[in-house]
Length: 86
Image (cartoon, rainbow, N blue to C red; front, side):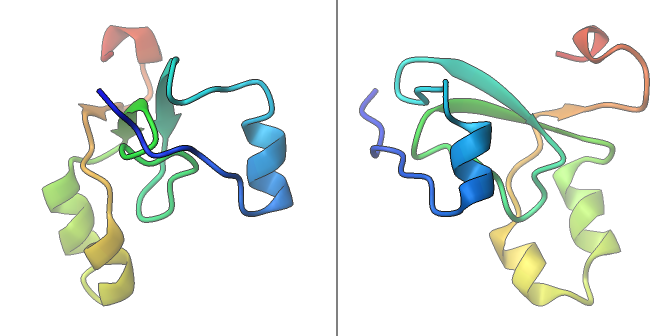
């Protein structure tokens, strides 16, 4: 699969992705909601959150800018060991 080259925008993103190449590595991001560090267009990333996407959209319905940019949650994690849900 061809991915769009990733370019960190903020200092925080640069620090968090300093040793990551999204085009060649797989990743998991926890709690990305509407503002992921790595987007699917940049690499093979899966998203983990405490609710599925549908319920997150309902919870944040008063923030349409968040809802419109929300990532699709791949795994729902409720506090157990994260490897039990991935």
